[in-house]
Image 1 (spheres, helix red, strand yellow):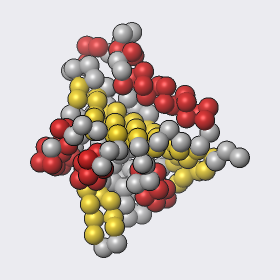
Image 2: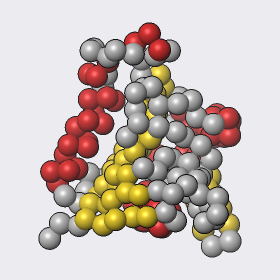
Image 3: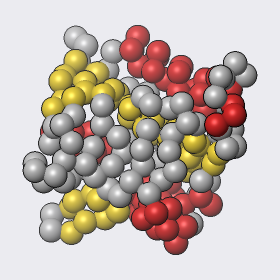
Image 4: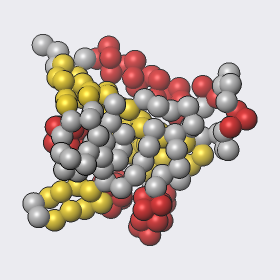
Length: 176
């Protein structure tokens, strides 16, 4: 039976971050319009998602982030400090047309919805400070294949060929 689960508001943190992102074993592909500060809460302690990505990339998890806007200053500063861009298993590419939000772990479980990779989107913000978000979690191979295929087309630059926004694209598929 195929999993199809609606995820609402604060449930994004537990379902998308704690279960899907932290549960990825081999590959994690994230598409988001916006990249900002996000803390992973572990008991009473927190770990920045940047440090988590660096640690997991060192452990062999292949992490790719496709995003539209320039990441927040916090994200860029900490990424530089920990040398995230130098990790063999970590890559980020920017395309101003990316607006989809998806998290695909190990090619087997997919989040598809409205939440960006931000504290107010899928992060652990309080109910009064987070965005109102909706999404689905599925293991449907047809949906996963379609989302994965679009991610790959954008990631590899195949969508750049016929892009009508080349004039507003500072560097095609700019990397971190």
